[in-house]
Length: 367
Image (tube, rainbow, N blue to C red; front, side, top):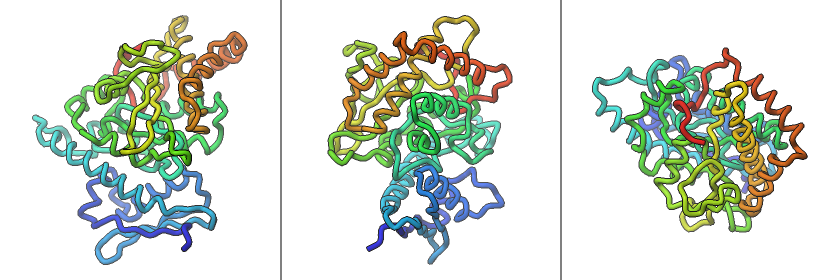
C-alpha cells in the first residue's frame, strides 16, 4: 500500500469553525484549512506535496499526496486530528475564561484586543525541535503566518550562526505557546492575557505529544527549548525538574537561563531534554554600552547551538552537548566572530524603528 498518499476526515463545519476564528471572511473554511496544512507541508520540507481539502457527506475531508513515492505522509492522519484534540481542549478553557470576564472584551478576532490562536502551519511530521513561548502576537492574525515576526527572525539568525541554514531551519521552529491567546506585545499584551494565565490545563503536554516522538533507538525525543521567564516559571511549576546543566551547576535550585532538565512527555516513552534560555526579544532591549548583553548573547548563541546539535542528533548526551556549546561561544577563539555577531545583532534588532515584537514579554525580570 502506498504511503505517499493519505486521506482522513476532520469533522463538520460546526465542529471545525471555532478552531479558525482568524479565517478571512472571503475565504472558505476548507480553503483556509488547506492553507494551514500546506504551510505545514512546506515547513516539513516536503517539496511538491499538497493537501486537498473538500466536503464529503457533510464533513471536511483531507487528502495529502507527495509526488515522491518514497515519502511517507501517513502520520498526518494521526497528528493533525491529535492537533485538533489539543486545540479543542484549549478552546474549551479559553471560552470558559472569556465568558467570565467583566466587562467583556471585544469579540475575537480583534487586532486591538485578544483572540484565541493555536499554532498553525508549522512543521509537524518532520519536527526536529519544539520552541516553548509565552503567547502569540496579534500580528499573526494579519499575516496568517506563525513565523512572521522579529522574534522568530532573530532566533533564525542565531540558528544560522550555528550552521542551520536555508529552509531546513523551519524544522526547528515548531512553536507551542503556554497561552494560545493572541495579544499585543509588551506590557499591554501581558495584561490582556493575564486572566488566561495557568488556565489551559493539559494543553501544553497535549500539544507537545503531537510533535514529539521517540528516536529510532527509543532512547530520546527531539529537544525542547523554553524561552523567557514565564515559560521557565511554567516548567518549574508544572514539573519537578532537576537541573543537570553544566553551565548553571545548580541541581537543587530553581530553573533559570541555561538550566537543563529531562522530562517524560510521551506516556511510556523516553525522556525529553528541555533547555531554558532568554526570550529571543530580550536582546532587542539592548542599551548601548551595557556589558550584561555580552552574557545574553553568549547564552542565546549557546542555546541555539545546542538546539541545532540536539535536533541533528537527538540521541546525543544533552549535558555534554550543552557543555561543548557553552565552551564554544565563551572561548577566546571565537572572540572576533562573537564581536562581529554582536555588532550585527545590535544593528539588525535594536533600532528604534523596529516593529513590534511577536511572542513578546513585559519588561524582563529574568537573567
